[in-house]
Length: 515
Image (cartoon, rainbow, N blue to C red):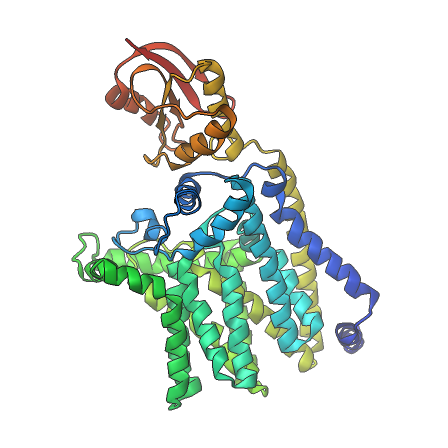
């Protein structure tokens, strides 16, 4: 096999502007990006659970009741062990746009997530093209299009799914600073890194910390650069600062309490267990960045990716590439160090910045292989990319076709709406109540849907008291399916049971009359 000819042809293809294959590849990327990401929007049946209900109630307060806020949801939904620390408010304000345009329809929120996901792929293309040329921009967009973890970010409404767009803005302005040396780019990349706290603080903190540490290498003694850097950070978290001042630094106190508390579970053996779990989470996160469904293969490819990247960076002649790509490599140990203080599991959505880092490093490796004319490595890399594309396309089509027809049981919007319709149809009167059992205890999604769907369609919202005719709407816990029975025996107790029915979605509805 003449590897040199293959390389020459491929280089000519990447440099060409009107090659027929470019149009075919662009259309393929559009298909791979759009098809799997749009399923929940097209079928109008997204996941609508605890987080979505809570957030939509908050957005309702902003749009309908005109109550502006300086904070978003509490960190970890109040169960992360850190009290008084909140995400930023701008996720709610972004969500308020589709809310207002659609009169509160949750499917419009999915359209927003889809738009941000597709815009992120466009930013990935722009960054790849800016660094290496149009062909490599397409490669970056292709890898983002088939990434399982990035596909998932478009499919339901959730604040941790928003950071990808702003991570890419951060990296774009970081790269533009490296090539143009303009101070306003420092302000922009630090602003967008800090701004991510509006969606997921667990991404914003290590990314911002790494930028601060890395700036010591870039800026050295240029004081003005540090002023732009910290100016960007401070401006991005202005709502947090105002909230902390107004509430006697409740978040800062909560963080100090968490870090200094003598947790009964914080023995050295358990800390070691968390450390091992965090390292495994890094590997799982890498595996989910690409269509690789095997932990050991993921670990092998992660080692190869980092090892080859370091090898090429050691002799990289383009200074802007050298400075840029050392950053995502340093980001991994800094992330692990920061999360070593976390006495909780390290969830994949804490590591979205690493997903983008792996894709960019992969693109850099292919660029370096071609630039150095390593023909055999190039052939192997192209075969690997082709295999990833086949697997990614197959998985996307398979999962999308299944999910488009999936009713979703109690987890998705249609199941909940159908249960509400069933109760209204049976009641045939405005004088009835509904009590809801939900495994998370809080009934946010049902409270919202009774307001949005019940009031809009039927003109009224049932009361939530045990009097007259009332219904029990019960969402069985898949892990503990018997718990709703305990709720009926301890919380409800009263009322004569008329009937009990199980709906196709899995909801259990019981009608009672209190005399």
